[in-house]
Amino acid sequence: MLKALGIPYGLQIAITLVFLLAFIVLICLTISQQKKIKQQKRLKKETEIEEERYRVATELANDIIFEYNIKTDIMQNSQKYKISFGRNPITYNYTESLVNLQYIHPQDRTIFMEYCEALHIGKEKIEYEFRILNRDGEYEWCQIRAKSICGSDNLPSRVIGKIVNVELQKRELEKLQFKAQRDPLTNAYNKGATEEIITEIFKNSRSFDKHAFFVIDIDDFKHVNDTYGHLKGDHVLATLASRVSSMFRTEDVIGRIGGDEFVVLMRDVTSREQIENKASCMTEAFNRPFRKDDHNLEVSGSVGVAIYPMDGSSYKELLDHADNALYSVKNTGKNNYSFYGDISSKKEKNIG
Image (cartoon, rainbow, N blue to C red):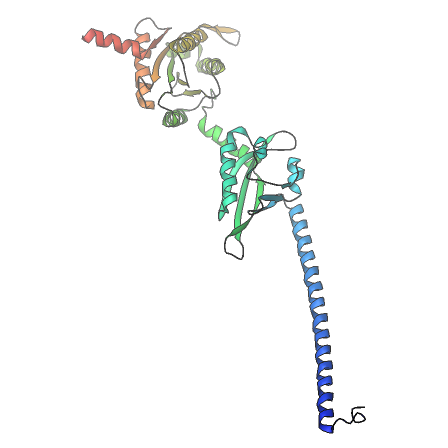
């Protein structure tokens, strides 16, 4: 065909080679494109398989897996989140919105806000514990552990982590702590725990806070044990502790620091009258009969009172001063209460 057109033989060969090369290139491109298509299909399939494996793994796991996008502020949890908490596993504006606070225990909301800040800045490692409202309307302790992932710009872009329900572990720990801190006979705090807890309260008290420190002692308790026996004496101690506990709030501290000696810290008092009413109620609690095995055991008790911070700012100082007030009562007829401030001012007058 090229010869018929009068094209020289050398040029004919050149043109033929060009067409041949073009054909070969076209075939190579076609093969390459087919390989790319096959590779893309293979990668897509592998991705789908990996996503399915991830989905199955998260469904089988007891933990809730989550991924937080720092840029979009979107939190995406695995489907187990909905099963556990009854809410949509995807949350928009997660750290900016205050809606999530309603699902956090009121005492843990400050910690939750710290957690949100850690997410927002993409902190490298994140570990927090707080209580979350479950689908049954009850708060459960959860542990959150996560780690940030950097993007192509080497800046944190996502946070991957898990939510672990640690409610059972917390309950077991609380039981162990209860046993370690409590007096087995009265369920009041034991001597060591009483001092530790009250010391911590003083440490965190503000300059204007006032607390009443009571020392309570059964009058002639040795006589009770000698006359009625130790079992009945134990009954008196346990009953007394129960009566005293019923007079105070959960935030107050009640401890047994000796055989028949108790300490009570009444937090955030507002007036002397309020303290006197409690002291009077405690002495009345002694005067009510202690019934055991058809026997009425009659006892009396004395109470010494010191005020934080006027009479002292440490546990040992207030214990010493409340003890002084207690023995002032013992020396003047027993079965009553006394304030350390009253007896110290009398001493100052006598010295004057």
